Every structure is written in structure tokens, then in C-alpha cells.
Length: 132
Image (cartoon, rainbow, N blue to C red; front, side, top):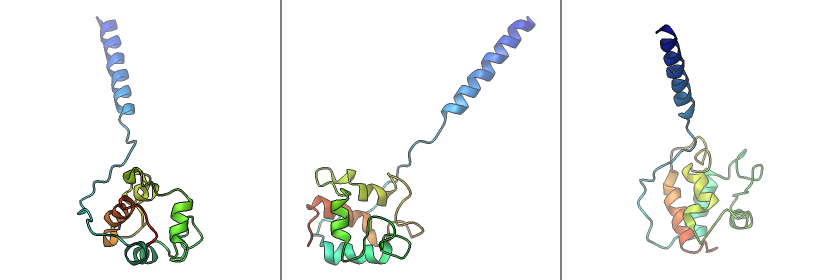
């Protein structure tokens, strides 16, 4: 009887170890509560001011870390680095970075979704990512 208890105990411990090791976090999903933008989004009037204020800062995306999101180079940097996907806007790398689906939510250390940048960026991409 004691051998059965030992075998049963080992099976129980093994099962618990497998169960505990299988519980790991592999992805972070950030749900968007933002209202969809239905008006025309201008890159120069709507997106660039937000990028300049929140992203193109010293030590961030002002030249030291790619892409350079300074007002003069933001559009070409996003397009040339293939960070925008007009075919499937929700899969655009820039949008995935902003929402935290690719890595840490951008901009780092700022309020979540400053100035509704996620919804604006997604609307701009859906509208063809024009340099307007």
C-alpha cells in the first residue's frame, strides 16, 4: 500500500509541476476603448504634432532611435522602414507599437494613448497613409 501512495504522490507532484510550468504569459493584448476617427486625418496637421510632442524627443525618435519621427523626416521614416501597412492597417508595425501589441506601449513613460494617437494613426493608415 505504501508503494501505491508513493507512486500516486509522485504522479501528483509531477502533474502539478507540469501544470505550473505551462502557465506562462506569452502576449499582451491592449484593448482599445478609443472612438474610431471618421473624419479625414491629415499627416501634417494631425499626426506630426503628436509625434513631435510625444515621440520625437531627445533620446527617443528624434534621430538617436529609429525611426526618426522629427517633423521633417517622420513620413519618409515611417514609409521607408515599412512601418505602415495600408492593406491591413491593424497589422502596421507603427500601430502595433502604439497599442503595445508588438512590445511596450509607445510612447514610453507617457500617459496611455496621449491625444488619441492610436485612433488617429489607425484612421490615417486606413485612409491610405497619405503625406497630406
